[in-house]
Image (cartoon, rainbow, N blue to C red):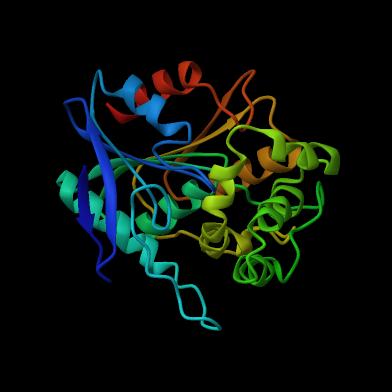
Length: 269
């Protein structure tokens, strides 16, 4: 198993496949190398690139240094984790993030992590009234639930309040084979929240957001994704200095590797 050590001493596990220019893939909420879409995507991209996937802190085989009770979550820690992996990859990587991982990728590029090209798929930004904003105390509520040992309830709260799934669908999730795996990483939902809650208030993206992200950026959505998510993607594309927008027709937030990999390959070359 490959590992890098982040600035606070946390070990971050990663996998490297393929050969070519370096690409780093960033997972969204509840996902990691053993449970998420990026492992299959890495295999598809490995024909043309050296591809790095990793377990974000607190997930899979990576360690964690959780904040003390009552202290704020510092998003810089996950940026530092990603920076350590980018350094291991040789710097100037092609960086891709999906969902909340897209928000992390944007934050890393803004913070100066060396990125040659950036691609993001559907960061979950709520920029208008097409759906309710997330609750103002969303992150705090997640931490309360996990701190009380109510991990299943934390996952359900995320699925209802952030994802917006119907209550019946969320109730049925406990019968899914990977339910225990979701509960195991429930504490990391608050880490994701640190990157997205400021952009999920049902308001236009703040002026000047990510002004430092000047590298070529591809902002992608699925043609069958909800209107609120597509609106957020279009708003992001209009905000970034060097971005272009692309829609993958027929795709949803659960984008298929066969649809996404060729687009990323073309953009990252």
